[in-house]
Length: 67
Image (cartoon, rainbow, N blue to C red):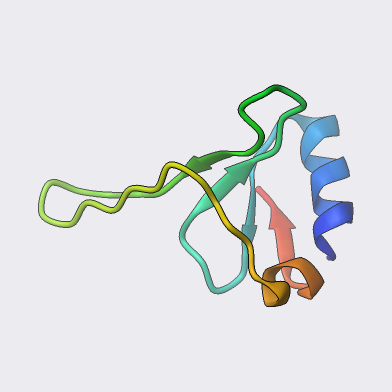
């Protein structure tokens, strides 16, 4: 589904959303925090990000899924 459809469904069901080829989970909110980004990590491999900056491909992709 497209990102706008995924956001609506994620907000309605209170769940996160993900792209098919990604391991980061986005939780859209209406707060000042924007989207909450969750990136899986373990003790050997840590990835972090303060903000998610989508590119054009993220915004027009139709492979978004709600968890």
